[in-house]
Length: 126
Image 1 (cartoon, rainbow, N blue to C red):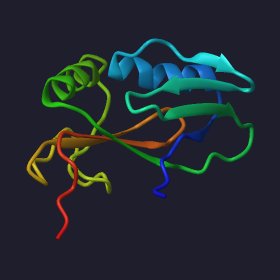
Image 2: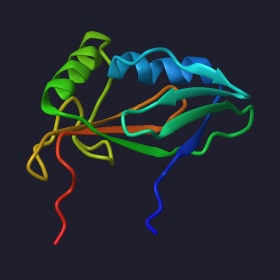
Image 3: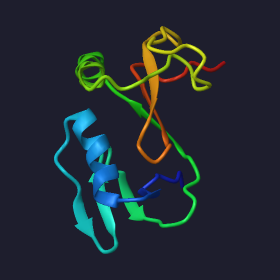
Image 4: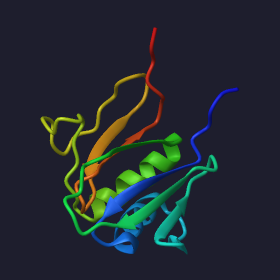
């Protein structure tokens, strides 16, 4: 039986502020409290559950596959907020998007240092 990701926990200094950073970018409703979490439901049934952590936050990578029209809206929000972004995960190509894997993509860091990636086409593998 194939496994399906149900949820993942994202550590943050302020769970609701961290969740709001993402929901504002993707145009989603604000996070809802769920136990000790600020829960962000995604289109495919997976939730990102933001948890407060007063220790050292270990950076995670969160990649979001979005349709072209949503990519344009998200990218416009990033530019409007004058957020730094990169065409690559190593931050070598600032204020650029990439055109790899038959689509477009870019990376930005959230306030807790998590790397958020938006792509319009899943990676092509052989």
